[in-house]
Amino acid sequence: MRSGKDYIIFPLDVADDDDARRLVALLHQEVGMFKIGLELFVRYGPALVQWVAAQGRAGVFLDLKLHDIPVTVERAMRGVAGLPVDLTTVHCGESRPMLEGAVRGGAGRVKVLGVTVLTSVSAAQLRAAGYADDMVADLQRLVLHKAQMAHEAGCAGVVCSGHEVATIKQRLGAAFLAVTPGIRPAWSLAKKDDQARVVTPAMAVARGADYLVIGRPIRDAADPVAAARRVAAEIENALDDRDTDGIINK
Ligand SMILES: O=c1ccn([C@@H]2O[C@H](COP(=O)(O)O)[C@@H](O)[C@H]2O)c(=O)[nH]1
Image (cartoon, rainbow, N blue to C red; front, side, top):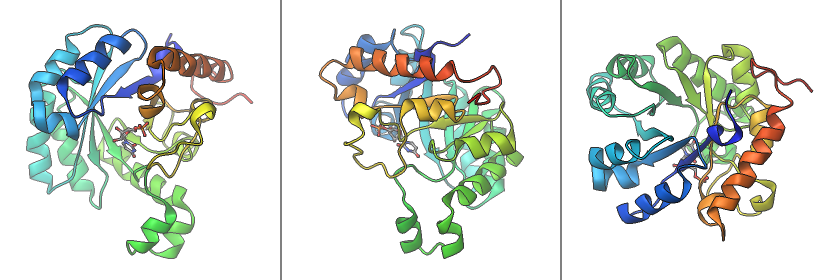
């Protein structure tokens, strides 16, 4: 049985490995997983991944969001699969072969997630980038389309916003993982930062999210441990409204 904190993925979005190590020491009892992104990985590489994995109960999410031709992605993913990593990412992008390459490279040793549409991206931005109006008018359709591609390619799940989780779970099944960034608790909703598609922890869980990526509301709080505990309590309350398949009861 997972508790509220098991749902929390805390991103180590800092430039310096001393800061990352300090945050891991502070929060490793409070969250389910730490996420290492490009900012830290390009500077400190596999050694930092191994250090975080060795620290205790929390898992590791290596969020590199690969996006390249299939063979390049497959070979990069082979390297990721050799690290002590639970989750990793590839952009869903424009082609299923790239996703299939990522899954082959992961070789079942790491759960590969397809990034659908970044939570920082709005419908207006997609329109400005040349997406057709009918695709953009209903962002859920575009996200679901990409999630379907990831599902067919054999990915373990997707990264999407809390707005699209329920549709993905209904269409692709409870076992297909939904990891949701763009989380802002009610007490920090006023500070969306660069996120466009935002929900509260309770909303994400009620809609069926398996993991919530939540960074700045915890990291920038006066007391990060207290903030993480507050989020975990909100998740636990929302879980009471879900049955074991993640289906919403009310
Ligand atoms: O669509 C996406 C995919 C990844 N992210 C990452 O999640 C965290 C969010 O941090 P906050 O401080 O809670 O906004 C960050 O590491 C992003 O790289 C995302 O936001 N959206």
